[in-house]
Image 1 (cartoon, rainbow, N blue to C red):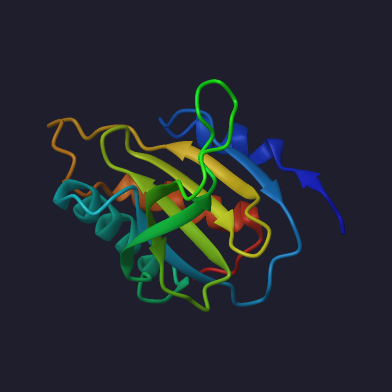
Image 2: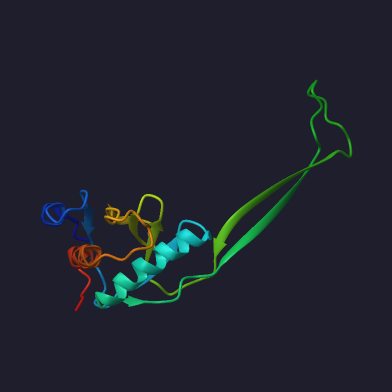
Length: 168
């Protein structure tokens, strides 16, 4: 597998008024499939993810519905709870409960992870969990996180091109 760090993309994008963009180029399918995943299910996170999704669509990328969030509760039972002196107490039970968020399955090749408060975006290959791009969009002049900016759309398109994804 050919590994190329695309420094020219960093220089090109840095000159466009954004912070530095780090992009790693891998063998990208001819028509990669993306899905945009917000940091959590808060409304401002979903709003920002929707804006980034519109940038991907305007760049001509194939985008599928984001997988549904689901909260998972896992309980584990452990037999034989140890007493403080190290003696096993017969019949004692211990349990541990974990809560975590999970996603339904998706056929997307890449997750586009979005973080509204910092306007940070990461593009991660789903199968390997490798981060291929990591960058921040500058806040709009008005400072509102939900505002769209034509320049931001261009930045996202250039990042996709640097990754090797075909766009219009």
